[in-house]
Image 1 (tube, rainbow, N blue to C red):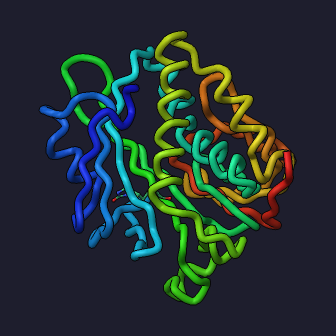
Image 2: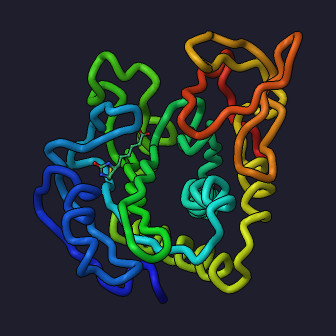
Length: 250
Ligand code: BTN
């Protein structure tokens, strides 16, 4: 086991990702930092990440032995692992590009991937935030798209048990990637769980708002969106809005 070989469980911390970043030079690969409470959780695009006692927030350190051109695809694997676990718990979660986790069209989880400087190989901090136990009215008003496993399914998953299941799945998916040096299967798995494949979506791309059909993922790990005139390739730093979110049972 690589992921979870060393778990640091903190009561309260600013951000599990920042904590892990600060100790990354002396941490072994697979180290996990789990916090009961984050006081300054970070989301994508410099946003803050809302969490409370109903959340599961943790970060892990990974050093994949992959060529640079495989890294984008690699960053999609943790969200796939989380969805596999949710589905094993009979929760039909889906994915929104690049790694938002949806249940009933509500965002119940997000993943922040950060690269830190390293002299040899890649050093990645994968921060995972999942809303497990919140009621719908616990989320701030501005997070109208947020939900939790409980608010969307009425299920109260046991946090420790679920966390361990996620770590096991992440570890087994990561082990396969490390053994084979191959990430091509991530694309297929990600698309199986995609909540908006071949649907109309809106993205902000190079300061333009584009509406088009989400066609899928390229072998580089970018997404393809077809507008009337052109097919655009968007990276994981592009934000995507669903026009009519729904999750299919695959
Ligand atoms: C997103 O914006 O969708 C990504 C959210 C990632 C939140 C997690 S919670 C654990 C880790 N620590 C942080 O400060 N952020 C990530």
